[in-house]
Length: 230
Image 1 (spheres, rainbow, N blue to C red):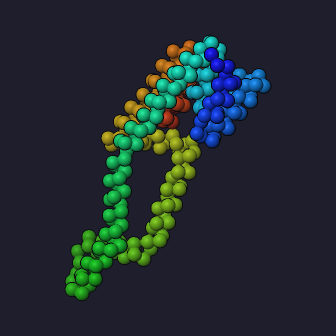
Image 2: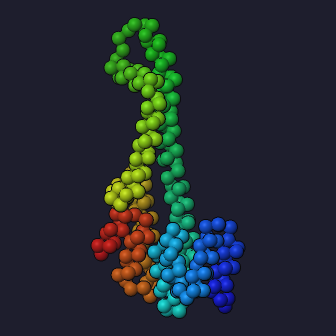
Image 3: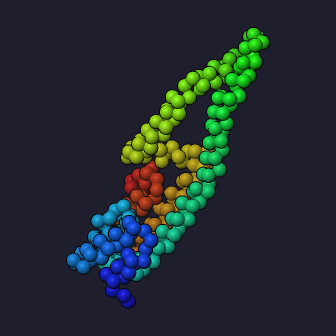
């Protein structure tokens, strides 16, 4: 029963996030000037997603704003749990792959050179695989700075590519084909879609609009494109 502007200011005073505090104060100021809540939130796309704004818009129009906030709260909590599960599922393979690369780097820099010096004293003809291994180690020793630079440049280039619309679409499609975790990524995207779609339909949103918003909120551009095609 607390007036919405007073409630917004109270939440702004109590939050620990400086960004959220400034956002809520701005929303309350816009509300005082006569702008509806959905439009006030739409001015802050980095804080409030399209799904959030659409739910608030429907809640305002149907007189069920409190119910819309409750559903959004439940959805955000489930999304937090989903992200936590994704991190747990990908943590082990990421650690294993990282450990392998670190071990290979250490072996090339410190272990193989020791054996190479021993082989050189023997003066024996080495098998081709051993020659390749020694040559790789010598290259790493001579150009370690170049290798590290290329790794960081590759990571930066990959992030820039994924940030583009086409790159994000291709990467999301590739992720679904990964062994073991690909199925997990697909199930997570579909669970997001079904959960958000059900929430918007229950709020009274038109099915075509709900599909478009749920596609964006699925977290996978490839699956989102298929939903938009539907």
